[in-house]
Length: 209
Image 1 (tube, rainbow, N blue to C red):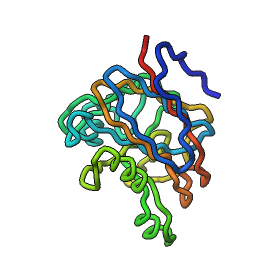
Image 2 (image 1 turned 30 degrees about the horizontal axis):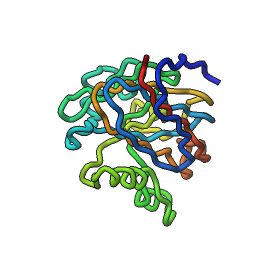
Image 3 (image 1 turned 90 degrees about the vertical axis):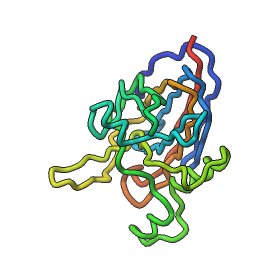
Image 4 (image 1 turned 30 degrees about the vertical axis):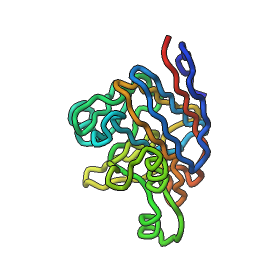
C-alpha cells in the first residue's frame, strides 16, 4: 500500500464509495479531501463547481492553460472554474497522472461504442448527484478522471488504456473556496480503464488542525 501523510485535524467524513456508485458533498474553504484508489486501476470521475455560483463550473481547458502542465493533473495543480475561480488544489498525489480529456462514459456512449443496452455510466451517476443540488444536464462540464491514464500519441490518437494506479494510490485536494464536489466511481466494464473490474474507493474529508 502507498504511504500517505498523516491526517491532522478533525475528520468530517470517511466514506467508502461502492463500485459504480456516486457521491457528493460541499467542501468549505480550507477543508481537505483525500481520494484513495483502494485496489488500484480504478477511474474516479470528478466534477466541481463554485458552491456559491453553480454557473461557475470547473473548466478543463483553462485549468490546463493556467497551470501549464499539459493534459495531466498532478501535485501542485489548481483546478479553475470558467470564471477563473481557484476551486481545488492538488497538494499531495502518489499517482502523478490524472486525465483531463477522456470525459465520462454514459449509457448512450456504451450503446454507441460497444453495442450494449441499459448499461449506465458516469454521466448518469453525475446527473443523479447533481439533481440533489438543483443541477441538470445544462450544468455538466468536461470532467477530471483521477487515476485514469489517457496518453496521446504522436499521431494524435487517444489511448483509453489501462490505469497505472496501484492499490492505495491517493490524491489530496484542498478547497480554495466553498466548492461542490461530485464523484462517479466509474462503472465502465467495456474498456480497460478500470481493468474491466470496477472496485470501491475511499473518500476522507477533514479540516486541518
